[in-house]
Length: 356
Image 1 (cartoon, one colour):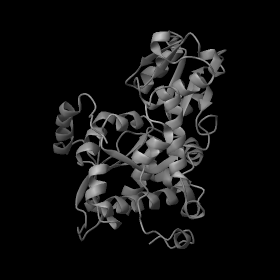
Image 2 (cartoon, one colour):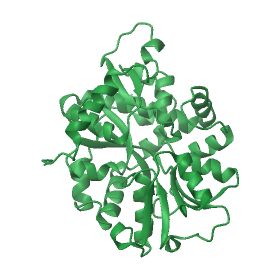
Image 3 (cartoon, helix red, strand yellow):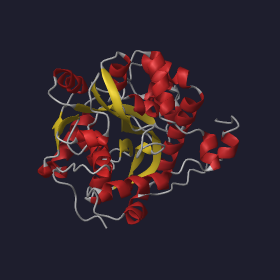
Image 4 (tube, rainbow, N blue to C red):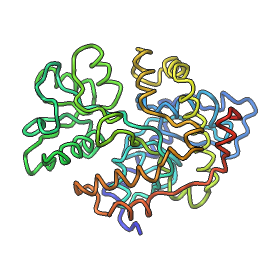
């Protein structure tokens, strides 16, 4: 079904080896948090050092010992999107959080499967304070900063523009995308007028908005066509899922404990993140408001069926198919690349407080 592996994947294997062998850049393992050092699934690596606030379940699962409870000795590592894809493809990394920018790579042959969603939107399009740019139609002829061409902020801006009659195709010349490896440099370019719009991950855009330096023209946590839809999904290595589905199920239980904790205790979760220096934000009030806007699911929401992962996968597959970023029709894409993993959780029981 997946015969073609993305370009450069073999060369990128070297990167995974380098990440695996480098311990100096990783956090201490969760073995320090569990004295008996008995782990059913042994030591694994999970990308969790990118500084984004939306990675909160990774940090909380680590700090609260949920990974250890489920049998994992976790080492949090730094890994860019390409390294994550290679790790998933080879089974060296069993699970990662990632956005719908992974969808085209799955179509191209990266052996990964969507197994859950992590939270709703964490990307904003911002303009310099007082700019006349307010709507998608105003993007025509403008320069938009993104973290990378083909990345999720790029896709968000593209979908928004295309849905409003503006071509996002570079060859059409209606929009120009400029990549910035550092979000702070992207903001500086916005302030200097080198770009007209910055498509950004939280918390940078939100911090700049609170400082009165930018206006938000699109917030995917609440604005159409992204509102009430997942921004970030959990991707399992298809290799690991086939060979040891229990391992993926255990990881999902750890993530779900963390999601429920964040849902029920947003202030405490943010304090844990700030104390651990996991995210580039020190404004607790702003961080709490962002955490709440991401709608991390509780056990109760999972139990009552209001957290529909499959529907969101299909929705974004359809949007990407419409702008030709995906070749596969949405329902077929979902049937190929989404799996409902049996975690044997009693959500009704857990939602009443029995979270073991």
